[in-house]
Length: 211
Length: 405
Image (cartoon, rainbow over all chains, first blue to last red; front, side, top):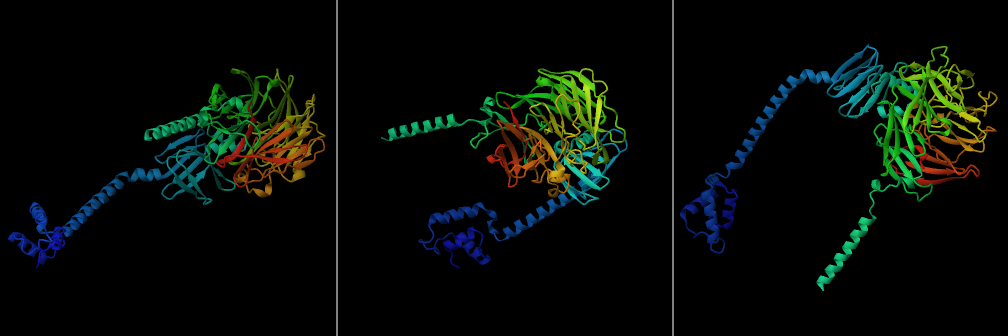
């Protein structure tokens, strides 16, 4: 096999067949320049290649390298994934109670003064004789009476009775009120209180004197 | 030659920079409140609110936008000359605001008035003494009168209103009109009750009570069955006015937005000057004439007033009442009872204070369809209307139009 510039470049790039590698290595050991015409490979280039080969002992197995890298990556990813899955599994187990508790809240107030229920995802202030059942996982709400509702993140809740979906924004304070007669849930932000009929506004201010 | 070119370029650049810097005026720093005659109070689409100050009603008028003085500040302010007064129901403070040199509305003074809701106010004989008629938040059936000196703010007197207790379960008091002539205090009120946790209705009766302002003892009460819910909260909208002779006219508001007893008519009534009683022979039945209820009554002179009427076929319920472009403005002849519709686009917003009368011309701020928030003029003598100026499309509602200087 004739060793020329193109073959040497191919060798340097690790794209040679086993036969070509053998031919080049024999040529290198031979330490002669006869096979390569002067016009195609200069002495300088040959020296650089020689130097490069001697500085890279593993270069004798260039074909095996990509396969090795692939296997290493698969192993690393598999290991990381396994660790993550295990970590997530244990985290879920450890936090299961509080997770469910904060996503599924049933709060009742039979007292005369309002009661505040604070959760990770929202706070609820229940007026007298009010009840709120909020399930964040299912995205639904069931209510009787009047509550002040302060979400701590954005989410939507569907009224179980009317199936109407309400969007809540983190940081705003909402007044939620159930009309027993029509079974409709009224939802409005605290700033919208100013636009209600005066009698209605006074009614809600009376319900939540701490607002 | 190259050096000369560079020098010329440098001089030009310097001049342009100086010109640019001298022309650039940061809006918030250079407002001269002295130049601003009028203020619009605006609610934006992002639910923020603030003022737009301007100098005159014409196309070239320059608007300066000013932020709300605080998060809790809203449209329910009492304005007198350059002072604004507002009760913050969250913290119970009654605050005096004024525009400062930077053109920002800033708190100057305050007093604590807790657990109450202001239903009505009047200035005592055009003085700096403010009379507030309030309803207790702990007891919806009890009204008080708070008398305040405003410079500086000081509560000088507080009296319970000794109104006869309602006979039935209608026990939520609403004081909608008030007047003080000399020592004779007169208030118009009604009683409501809740029919469910989210709905209420008002008893079919208006009450007018006459007191001696100094003594505030048992009043003489007149009952009127012709309508209900006389007037309304006048920090939000005007419902009464006196004509040139001193006759007091007011409008009842039994519609969905106030009295919520829609079977009774919206109507205009009057109490003649020097009289302590409402004229039982006088009534303009607005609902009969236009088939709708109305809110807001502004006297424009020469026995004429403007009212703002809803269109019941255009809204489904109260939740969308303020969103629908339904409100029409009518001129009412208080002598003949004739109504004439003003030719401007339909407005939105349930209750608004956006009618201003100056030099016999009526100016109106309208939120019409196609995101057009604009100022209009109406000449009562010719009936001619004119579009004056369109405002920022980010506005959702123009809630008030006030003269500030």
